[in-house]
Image: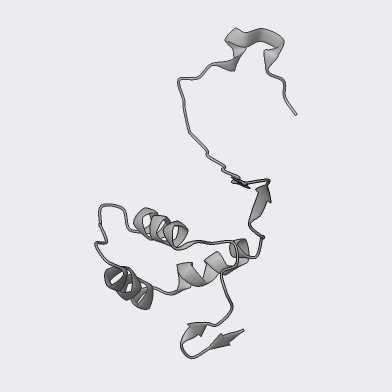
Length: 92
């Protein structure tokens, strides 16, 4: 649900630090000293932040006192040669 001021639903699985990190990744080379600067960036380009809503619907999950954090990273490495590992790597 949206209003003229932007999304009115909560980002249930995001914490303020997650949105700050997203802002820094989105604006590489730029540093945001305050929440006001971050919000000015959101106002200038709100669409990427609206797209965060889809990922934020996953609930925050805990096991006992530990928060479970799922992280995915992709690294392009043209120098990696899986053939040297023989059958340790297989094609899917």
